[in-house]
Length: 112
Length: 114
Image (cartoon, rainbow over all chains, first blue to last red; front, side, top):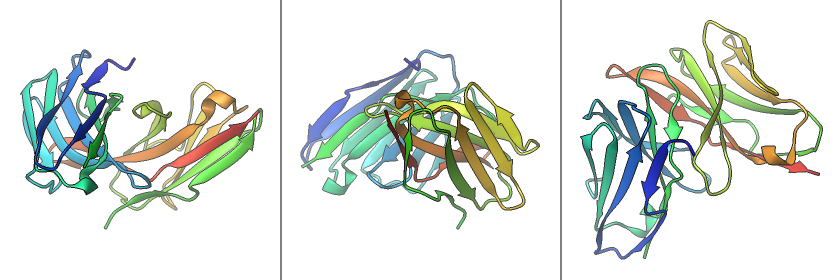
């Protein structure tokens, strides 16, 4: 256990569905991240929140919408996704600054 | 653009051998590097890190070497065990907007044969 939990662990959705991924960290960290991990590709950073404010958005399509209501919780709202969005979505947290990240187990998403 | 990449996608070794996983980076401004291990069904897990003012750092059975001249990073695992089988990623950290933003390589799959 890394202290970072993600729900659900698996999700199947149609292209017209709306769903949300949830991440929670119990480490007292003040930075949280969303990553997309596709087969045979490097981890792609999607969003970074530091002290609940978004500090990085790597040109992610608007069908992905992050929300960080407090320093312990991070959501990724999904709507009208495409099949190519099928991937493992990883959440991570860090104390901030030049520190390593702690990853959750990920949500395996399949878009039909 | 700047990138972090790994030389070999797959490395197969016998149990007990030493393993060396390599990583090249191209951003000379990077000053903090991390190696992660990702087992099947899990998220990446921190193994060891190194700052740019160092060229070697040792942990338990693992050593990271940093060669800033050729922008090369390596992870050495001593006496490799079946439990070491996983995908290994290197990551470099770059400052962006006041935060450290990691960039990951593609990963090397380490397979340890008993």
